[in-house]
Length: 377
Image (cartoon, rainbow, N blue to C red; front, side, top):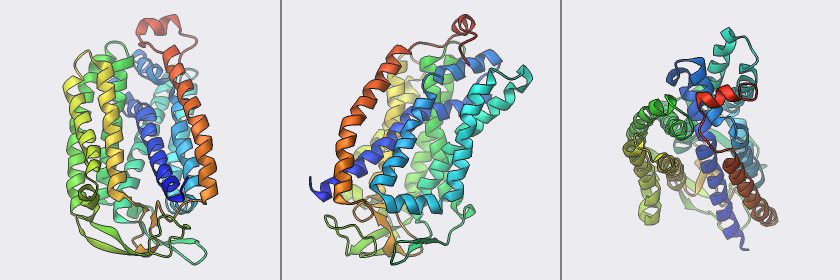
């Protein structure tokens, strides 16, 4: 298979992994965001927790797989991003560590201490939701890094500079869309009264997603962007130091939509899915509502990817070393081997995951909690 094709395939596959994470682990994060606020009693909190309990640990594999694929397919991106966003990554890691601790110890501690576990779950949801959105927001503005002749990166941007107004808006978009995913899941899998409250929250979260996504789009249209002027080699050896990039006027991030009109499907999916949730959340079509919410997750992430294309990690310090999908990838042989491995194991993983959902499907109700009080969280 041509090197150029393999580069593009892995750009798509890594995007699919991030979308899978937003859809699958998104309802875990969204549930955690809502836990202290949408439940009134310990029993209701247990219903919410056990509605996601059968799959929460498996859903995190999407994020682990995305990190592993990033390391193997885009090693320079992995090294630069994980070094430059070091404190942000640690913040996410520590937050996610709280999740298994809170899940496993909540049913073992004294009743007066369960609130500590509940707030631990909340932190494990809201912090990653915010940080992931902030990270995407900073990609559009460029990150302060440079590369020397040996591809060693240096950084001129600190952690707190990442918390700029546009990035924080993107963080709010992320919180809104993942909270919508969590509330729709609760309406699908939880019993009364949680499912009725979740329907109300889903409509509010869908409205917040629509408004913040639109505001972010308007802001992006007025942001200076990055544009490759010359020297970008698409089908040859990867070397991010050979091209010339300049910071263009506002609106450049929207150029791909006129160059490749099919990309308009992404923002349409983002808005249409959220509108579908708003209209269907109070109906009995819970499965269709969850599908609409999942379409929104995919649409918003695809919108970010399509807008940035072909950039992966632009540099505001030295635009010429900005990393793209064409010049920051592994060798032809490595991508070829990875493609074969992915072609074998990804279908197996999807089949196994589907089987798990099939076998563990059903609503979590107060009656079910009472009947299985010693085996559930």
